[in-house]
Amino acid sequence: MFENLSDRLGKTLRNLRGQGRLSEDNIKDTLREVRMALLEADVALPVVKDFIEQVRQRAVGEEVLKSLTPGQALVKVVNDELVRLMGAANDSLDLQAQPPVVILMAGLQGAGKTTTVAKLARWLQEREKKSSLLVSCDVYRPAAITQLETLAAQVDAEFFPSNADQSPVRIATDALDYARKHFKDVVIVDTAGRLHIDDDMMDEIKKIHAAINPQETLFVVDSMTGQDAANTARAFNEALPLTGVILTKTDGDARGGAALSIRQITGKPIKFFGAGEKTDALEAFHPDRVASRILGMGDVLSLVEEAQQKVDQDKAQKLAKKLKKGKGFDLEDFRDQMLQMSNMGGVAGLMDKLPGVANLPQNVKSQVNDKEFNRLIAIINSMTPQERLRPAIIKGSRKKRIAAGSGTQIQDVNRLLKQFAQMQKMMKKMAKGGMAKMMRGLKGKMPPGMPF
Image (cartoon, rainbow, N blue to C red; front, side, top):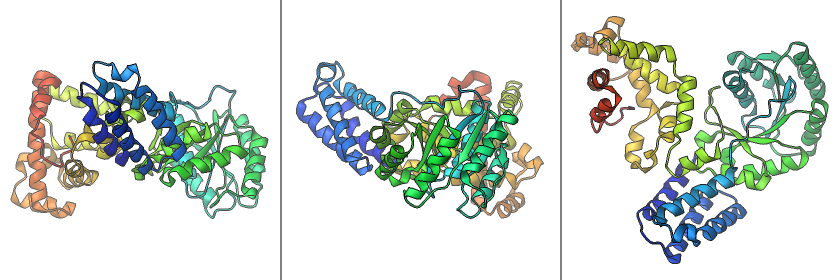
């Protein structure tokens, strides 16, 4: 998300950073570029106007013009206003009420609502240690109930059965009653979506809302619809007291107009955003961190949190002990490191959060991708356990067999072995002299396409 906006804003603001003096003219030129970048990102026009005016007022004041580093001061103003636009801080779910806490999910058809229900259940279980009961009140879409039942099993959440002959209101109240009797922490209620907002849909969801009185009513919206997402959320909010918004499909949205428009148009916070189909692809929405990503400054805090959640700490400890004892770093370890990185959203997900990556040339960024990752893992999977432990034995006939088994070429196997040999050297340096020495050794030595 924000790829195009980040590129445009990055180029515009980069020219200002080193300037010792700013005039009203070059501030005006900069704001014109920022305005165009926001409009191209499909941010709603009233939001753009307000944003530019707020930045302009601060930019021509003493805060910027009389600063010792006015270029950097203006970048800070843009960052601050982006945070204000999206909300000062993350608005977390209200889980303080007496259990079971009820979360009602609303949205149009095709926004990814049912998948998001499962993602949210997993997030609650992993981050908040809460047990969830999932229930589908969608009696219209074929296989909607079955889909949620399947997803519930994937995330180890309990599913409350329902069928197309039942009343959606009755399904919701029965599920709530069951949750009370079985001491569930949270009930997540999936509702029917429509291709557009209609009176029947609104009447039904209002009745469900009145019957179960949810603590959270979350509107799930496809971020790729841009500013239309904000307008749809506003229409829902007029009929239903929304408490927040979840943006979906942000991995396919390079513009980011929805994220920048929703808060100001609806007055409701974005609480989460989903980036992918996997059930772990849900992140809490932190406006300050998102603003940092937009301006190419990365999001190290989210990266650290993700590592704590998704990296196998036991394996990491075993590898550290192994290296400390002077035992070699083998291809099994190499594959484990790549799989750990895949669990954290792959190379693209990591690069999005690393500072400075936005400033890399596009041809460099395109070389580092998850396809290369998967190819390397497939090659290692085609090796025998002995070959993974002792890569030196991999010669002509073995290379041919490994290439055939992984659907690659012998050149690919050679490239992997060369990259592994370099990684092995770096690991030896780390074992002997710590991380600082390893990073010095890595500098400029890793070949293109290598995700380290």
